[in-house]
Image 1 (cartoon, rainbow, N blue to C red):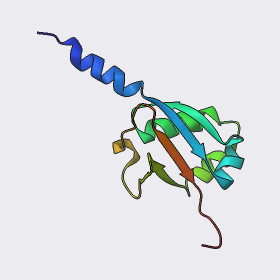
Image 2 (cartoon, rainbow, N blue to C red; image 1 turned 30 degrees about the horizontal axis):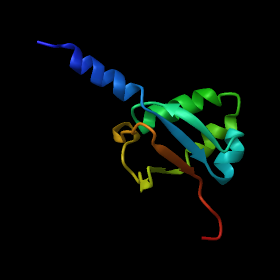
Image 3 (cartoon, rainbow, N blue to C red; image 1 turned 60 degrees about the horizontal axis):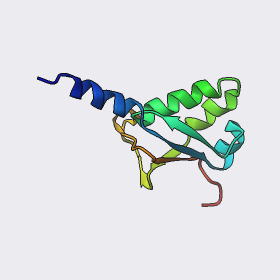
Image 4 (spheres, rainbow, N blue to C red; image 1 turned 90 degrees about the horizontal axis):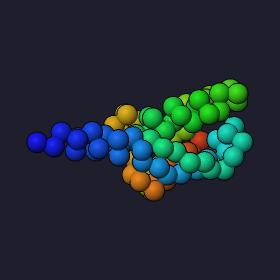
Amino acid sequence: MDGGSQDDEGAAMAGRAGTIRYWAAAKAAAGTAEEPYEAGTLAEALAVARERHAGRPEFARVLTSCSFLVDGDPVGTRDHAGVELKQGGTVEVLPPFAGG
């Protein structure tokens, strides 16, 4: 039996790399338009981003009102821990926009 295949699969999930793109107020709060992520889920990617920007308290506040797209698909009300990220994927962080 090759018990390593499950371990390899878990390591691959944790090591998925992609890009987080910030828009409008999220971009201002992060101080950057985009940055890399390495995470298996949206929740993990956002936790790392919060830690990365811990010196910018506005960043964490802005994230609480944002909506998210993962590879162009709206996350909506889904639990971020259940939203899997793909290798080379893109997370769009969209704060509420005024004027509709």
